Length: 324
Image (tube, rainbow, N blue to C red; front, side):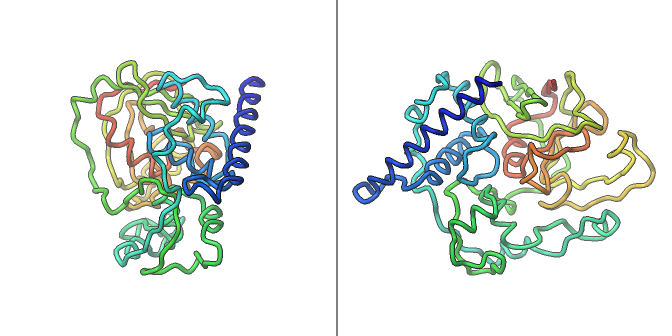
């Protein structure tokens, strides 16, 4: 662990040096990044685009940026050294930021929401509480980060027609997702396998022996840990409803006292439910992406919705999921 930490300290120092060099040359080279935040943001966007999730894009070096970089390097046969930055095709991410204008259709994804299950069950869907939350999830970004790159704008009062500066990442388009209780089988994915490291809090997806994706996760809790062993995916649903059963959540047993929470991005399981052969356990999205890797779940494996949306179409029924 000490060697691992020392590596990341050295790598962060290298990034800081790059940022300083970029700042010195900002007036002579248009493509140069001007500060440390832009250097790290570019890396985070690159890793995200390659399906090696760095967690929330925030322009800061952190745990999951480092883990995503390590997993990407492993997948591409790269040596993980302080020089790895120069081995990455980061020029594919330019510009680092872009602008997005909020539409009337976007505003339709905002509405009343409640965390009380009995009240949530009465709603037609579980939408975003406001347009800032919509933008945060669409561009995989933290609210503080968005406010920093939009200095002078009141992002808490966004409306249709407003333009927001965002990281230049492929957006998570909630409007493109369909509510499907069971995705069709994909025979071409039959050789894929999933490995979940509950200590590292990362999910790895392999196609044969090739690592093709890795995402940060929340794997259960001390009370209800993600169950170790080998399981299989028994079904995959997008924009699922959620059966809220306190007995199941707290003790792992179904009861007759439950509420059916409607679908939507702020449903407790987000935009995905990939059920496992272990009863009540699945891989799913979340209504609190900022807590991925940092808060507990009820035995399941949670991903940020933008990762869950991609992951849903990279897997199929019958795949083996190994949890350890």
